Image 1 (cartoon, one colour):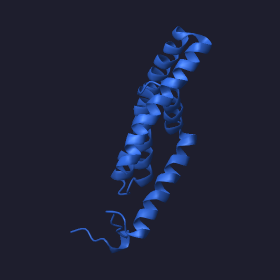
Image 2: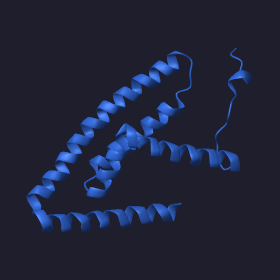
Image 3: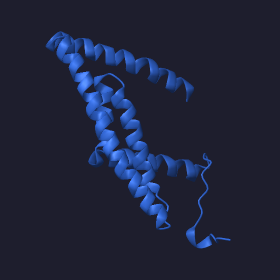
Image 4: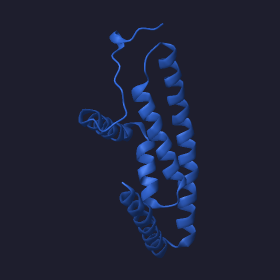
Length: 138
């Protein structure tokens, strides 16, 4: 896991710099920097808007006594997408927008669910499943 993280934290920035230099060579530095700034601002606005919607949905589900599982995963997706959009770079911006836009967010959530289910089924997790019918409030 650690080696994957180190690889991710070294390869992605180098790739992002390469793409930014190529883009600046094609359209010049001014528009390239403007693009990075605009995507950061637009992403922050979109993440804030989507985050508020998900937060309200989580509150509604909790107040009605339901576990907000999907809403929590949506919130995680928006959080990660927002962080990626604030990181300068083209690949991180594309990935960030995909994680914030509700239609494409579904793919990330399905991936997370399959990972969590795999961890639960193999016993490699700290998750505990509690059946609603087996739980008694005291």
